[in-house]
Image (cartoon, rainbow, N blue to C red; front, side, top):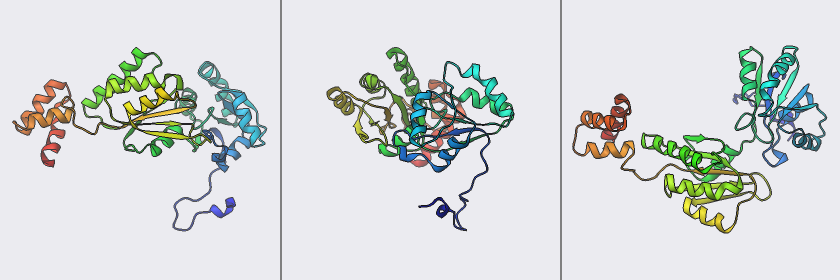
Length: 297
């Protein structure tokens, strides 16, 4: 369909138009399938003065596939801080600079956050062209509760640190947090990470999404133990997004479990006071939840 045909109807709040690009433009690129590049992203990359990217070779292949011949320079974890002042100078000179990651939406588990913060602090224009994101794509394919969800980037690579991070999240669940957790993970660590999830969170529903939008895309769904058994037989390959859903049963040690046990024999006020003291959580928060449980019957 021609771009012109995409103009919004009078009843559609989307106007199909956008202001001319200038300043720092965060451009989302495909996570695998080149067909997912948007027309706005193509225009931004073709017309900007400079493209900042993690790897000029990888971005160069993307640009070549679209017959775009823009200037590229690196911006990654090791040089971002040193590059900020020069980039701000170019923005002050009214240049348009695009920022891309190797794939997907910039900043999300990728470099660029410090540059964006600096540009905002300097009062320079910052805008974004939305597009593909592996975490959100995996979430909507997972079959797990979509809201709320928490994206946590990559788990720590060392097992002790990873288990400590998972234990912190489990403690937050016991204090009332309930959401779907989403991580990226390297294929050679997936099996070990699934084992840690099983030990810390228990055997709950989870999903492993691989090679999203590519030819060999797969989404494996099931209990953590079943997924661990699967990838023990068939080692994982490719880019991976890992998800685990909230607990579907009451945990006698979490906030709701403690409150239900206390409410069985005590008033709302006394149950909230008891659980607040036991957990260290603010009494107002515990009381509000106790009242809600009581009213739900």
